[in-house]
Structure formats: structure tokens, C-alpha cells
Length: 283
Image 1 (cartoon, rainbow, N blue to C red):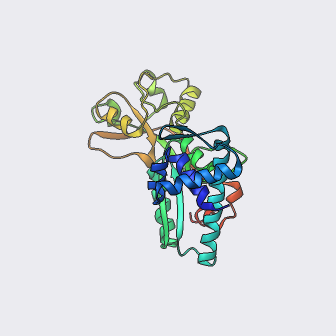
Image 2: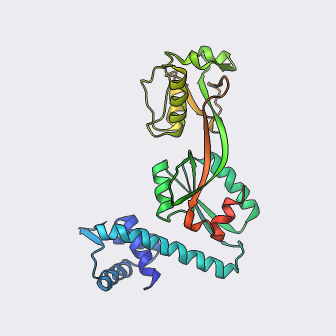
Image 3: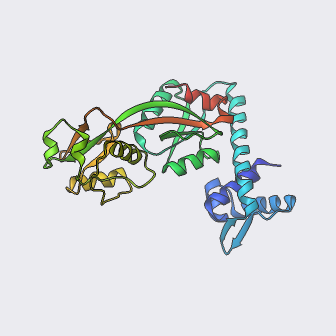
């Protein structure tokens, strides 16, 4: 069966319509429609529910999606290997990440070793980044925190202390570091539930018996930074992710009790892949 049909199927699944899939693939809409119709006719399985112009995966379609994405990834890697005779002179490496801080550093190192490779980054939250990796949308995932799943292989990249940052008018701004007990009753701004930074901070606070004010939950690093600039509370961030600002002062917690660890992930079954291995061994 032609992999062009698999690509058409995946494009429609991701884009939600024939026209959007055709634009993404750079082909005509009738071509995509014909490829989907052929897939369904030959398999005698309905892969999509038609809702006007919109197309949604059926239960069978959702199961087939993972297989189709895997086949496309394997085909691309086979073409890559044959074309380059096993060398990394050209090709594409797709990386998923929750933030730009570590991944840009990694890509700079990788590009220096393999200047002919095309690199792309797909940003998202942890759940989306892992989903993209497991569905073969990306080749590599860069995440803060260890996810122990049998299908994943993880490699530790770096460990960083979590620091606080305050507005310059805050009393802590006059200090290089504070004791964790001094956070008792302080307005602490934290990310949403599931954030690795939040989990690490809450763990050390609970162990120390410290109860800050946790009245404001914010969904992004950038929003927390803006809230601290406006004097709404104290922010917490990995020291590698702190962005300097004339209004802000970084403050350490004595002993650096809270830390985050960045890991690089790949699918275990692809760990021997030339493409994946080249990145995992580049740092």
C-alpha cells in the first residue's frame, strides 16, 4: 500500500479537513480525497466521520493513526539512511520541548556537529510533547522531570536549582538568599497543577512545614513574570529559565533544596536509529 495514502490519512487526521490536509501536503484536494477513499475501500473500514467539511477520526481511525505515523517515520528514516549512506549530511530531526531554554542549547551543539541537518522544534506542555513523541510526530522530546514509561528511553541532560524572583521593591530584593521558613505567609505565585517546577517547590515547602499564600495560580512562565513585575507576589523558576529584567531581583533559597532535572527522551524502539542516536549522543 502506498505511503502517500498514509501521509494523506495522517494529514487529514491532524488538519481536520480534506482542504486543510491538501494545503499541508501541497497537493490537490481531489488527490487527498481519492487517497482516503482508496484506504477505506481497500480496508473496508470507516476511518473518518464526515461532518460537513469537517472530518473526525472513528475509533478504528484513532487506532490506525499511531500505526500510520510509525510507518511514515520508519519510511523517512529508511530513505534518509539510503540517501546518505548512513551519514548525517542531510535530513530532518523533529524535536518537541516544553520550553526553549535547554533545547536551543542542545540544537546549537547538534548543528555544530551536523550542519547539513534540518531541525524543527514543536513547543507544548508536557502532555502534548509526550503525545507527539509517542505518535511519531517528533523524534526527540525534551522535558523537565522523569516520566517512567516502558516505551520511553530517558537520558539526563542537566539539573538546576529553583530560585525565587521578586520585584525590586520587595524586602527580599535586598538579600542574596533567604531561608525557606521565610516564605511562610508570603504570596507565592505558582504554575498550574502538573508543572514540574510547582511540584518541586511544593515538595520542599511541605517537608519544611512552610505554608505560603497560594492564592494565585498562573498558566505560564511569562505570565508569572508579569505578575511579579506588577508586585502581585513571588515567582519561582529554574535558574536556567530566569529572564533578567530591571524590575526583578533573583533570590536563592538557602541550600538550593528545590531542583528540576531536564531529560531527553526517545521511543525505546527507536533508540538504535541513526537519526535518534545522533542527537542522544551529541551532548
